[in-house]
Length: 226
View: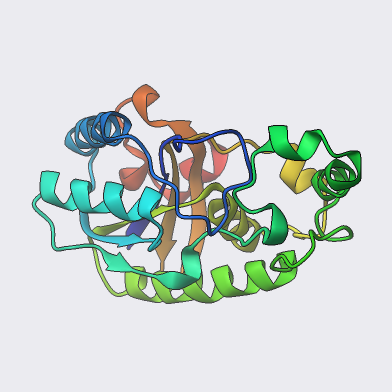
């Protein structure tokens, strides 16, 4: 039995935009802040991470590398399948620039309302994104099922959303899944793996608000009631 801890990267540098595969950075100060907070989280909980998996995009890779140094762990494994969704022509384009062109802004609004029915031009399809993330997630689950130590996965908000949809059997075509769930920067989502079965312990907890975490040692019946 092991846990997989999903850590979303910190706030990126740059204007407000859809940052998918555009390789933007997080400031050194913000990354170091997350490292300090995660070290404190590791020190107060019952389990320990022995391996780090990361999206290869800079906003995750840099943080993952800093974390492995701080925790004296092997270098992180890069998993290309857990990089963020590609948003096509809108990827990395500042919203302020798009807003001034109504014919360009309207497709963006339609996408926000229903991303499956209104995909962005030249973008990765949401169903395809879900499929590739699920394939990576199955590999992570298989690895976690064969070890006792926890795995830390440094990735993106969209990736965490797709993993949760797979674990909770939620239809990714439902627009409410994208408007009613917030996954903040630097938040933690914890999933318990036992004999390839997954159970969500918590979703998108701010890392600085972590209390003492005894969820790894609670009986299953108590976990179900929490």
